[in-house]
Image 1 (cartoon, rainbow, N blue to C red):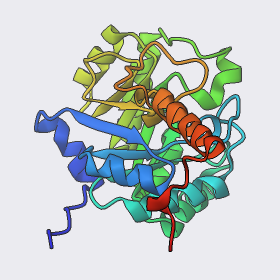
Image 2: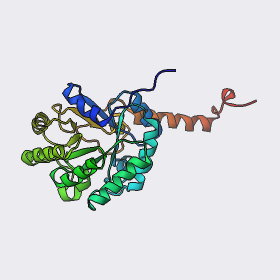
Image 3: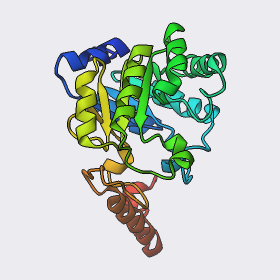
Image 4: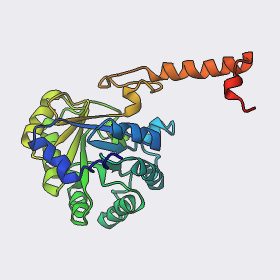
Length: 266
């Protein structure tokens, strides 16, 4: 029997930057995908509130609830043996005061096998990040485009206020965040911010100057319906492969080819 893989901790995740290792993070929402992603050797797995759009078919991330996030986090947590598992705190679970934020994040860690939470914001969430860290809860921050603030931002737009982006990222670091996601900002700004911070920057639509990259796993597998952002790179066309297999099953049943003798008990 092969030895159990060593679990990556939040401090070890942070230390990858100083070691000069680029960091990989992918999303997972269920057991079989989480197993595959973990076995691929990525350093982080994000149970993202993107499940509202990817799994539930919602138009944005706002409708997903804390209970739903915990449900998916518990499933993913059971599958993962190596990667650091980070769970998005859904809207508005960390906007209801410090004590409520600690209660919500505490539930995520207590009711799943996950290890850290992620919340959107920088300077505006500095107090909450610090309180969570003081309570022993590792926090990944998220600056730039914040999908939970899509209505306030006026849509999914590239964020170009470099001074504010840097201030947000540095505030998150000062509050104790172990890493920060930079979403949909210019590559120039992302590279500059990455050089300023001691903690890793994880980019999504932020260029190669970040310390790591995160994508929605379904996007890179070509399994996404509808709009695919510019920053996504498709590594395969799983959607077409699945559609072909499903149609082949339908045709085999209709023609009598399935089930055959090899699929039947005598």
